[in-house]
Length: 247
Image (cartoon, rainbow, N blue to C red; front, side, top):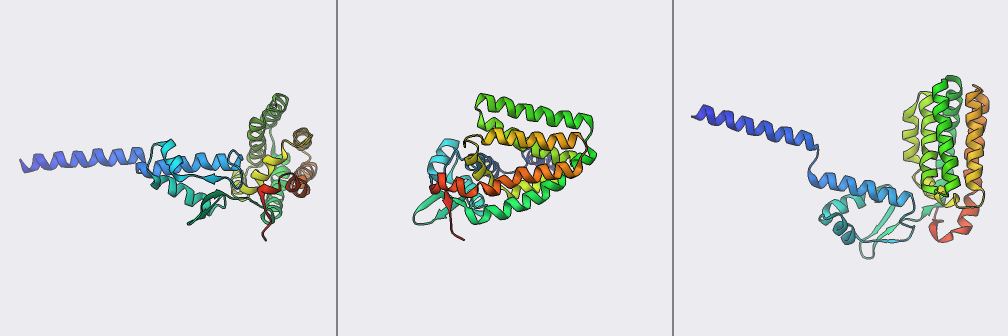
């Protein structure tokens, strides 16, 4: 009898262990991860505007969870500089730090000039076709006035250039650096002629890659990303309430 009970206990332990492996993380951690991911998208895409108040209780209610996973997600977003938490006042969407933009753009520009150059040296015909398809998607989104789809295709274009270059990890690093740049870029897209200009600049990058012109691709990417530096003041002038000028 004791031996049989031991076998039953072992079986139960194995089932529990298997269940833990399948679920991966406790439910609270999974909820926190989902809330973090959803909120991050809303913050970076400016669905939640800089300066806007965030209600911990409201988020918990909408997800049907306690405040614990919400608080965990909020603290993580605060660490990334997307939220500001004031114990006595509340939680607010952070304003875009003007001082941080030039450095992030310069880092991105240096890395993407390299990926564009390497992509031109290594691109296959099928990879060029994939880039051409993404650019066409951007044209369609522009014609439809769909800035969200345009932005998604824009991200895909740059990620694919890094992939063609043979260094997809570079794009992952750039994504970490450019959080506030993405928020700023979202404000530039509605500006007259901006989307059309991006398409022209992407076409120049792609044309150079297709011609296997490494220096031409590098230069085209440099020109494309340089415009982000040039537009900071103008964009800040249009949306002064969204920016933080503290050094």
